[in-house]
Image (cartoon, rainbow over all chains, first blue to last red; front, side):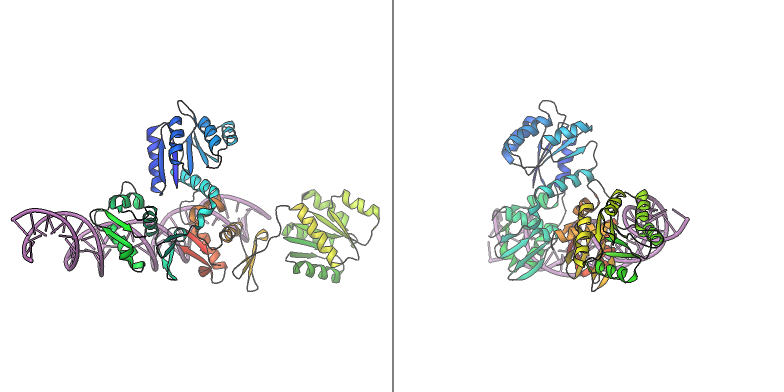
Length: 221
Length: 221
DNA sequence: CAATCTTTGACAGAGTTTTGACACAGGCAA
DNA sequence: TTGCCTGTGTCAAAACTCTGTCAAAGATTG
């Protein structure tokens, strides 16, 4: 799930980005309205967070232009202006929700997740085929040869990453970034241990998750 | 949905009560006007059926007094007097409909349901089956193995959410979002506590509401 | 103010993740 | 080939996190 965050204040931008990445989102950061539009073209995010007050092109204007190209992707405003009329103005432009500054991290996450749930209800029941394994990521569950397999949250994240790379090797660093968090560096055998678990749970596991020495792991698919 | 029935003829009163209970209503029976007013205070029914001709305080008078306290709850007259002027008198007092005696059970039900639909458009007196539990969300009530279960508003919301997801896990975030409100963040064991309550009220509860660690809960169905 | 419903804090218990010790394997140079 | 270095596999214990449960405090409603 990709989120484009636009905010002119660098500290706030980075904090938001980090917060969202912690929760497993892909985050693209824009420091202004023009950049936001440009990045939108490149990455086509699933959700856009816009600061209203920015030098140059403000959030309203960005919203208007985005809505010309795409009316579906949810847009969420971050705003220090909390007057009723601004909220109304934003909603008329097709915004999905508002977050008033200063905000708590809890509130940001709750609202973003809520908007995502409303916009992508189908994401609640994905099903992914990986070789002869069927994975239901949201249920922390998989099946192979008619046999049910219980997974943990981390194992699912790892499988999804492997699936996303479709047979390409995924480096250890990338695993840690995407399944743990950017600034997490376990100092010993943590990653190996989790790969071990996956291999144990999936029949013929060490054939399916192949070790690429000096790099990381790859899923044979 | 609670209905207060007032009628001085015991046989008729019991028959009406039985009829309504068959249809899943909660029925409170009053054998006279004074009793009706007293019971109204106690139970705050969603609908009142009043016989017009009763010894002591008659239906008109009860209606007038009820309307002083509450102008919303629908009132329905049962009457052997079927002349035009009586109907007009009743409607002026704020009654919602008339049923003429002798009445057919079909007519009674049709009129009562019609009045309810008009007065409570948002409620359909829905009935939802979840595994072996039948839930009447609007009545904060459920039944399992013929055993009645009283629910609170929050418990009903939680059940409805679980039902809506049909066996998929519902995340803790989503519970808080949908059953509490977007910007509500209880800081401790609130959600667990409510799940606990539901499990306690529903037989075999912890089997039915399964916990998905790190995610939330799911209803087995 | 009494009854009911909700929230909270403390604590226990279960499940998951991390760690450290050690074994093993692959690559490289002598 | 042998020996060495580095990277990986495996295990079990330790550390940590999440959830269940209880009792009591707080809110709400009649």
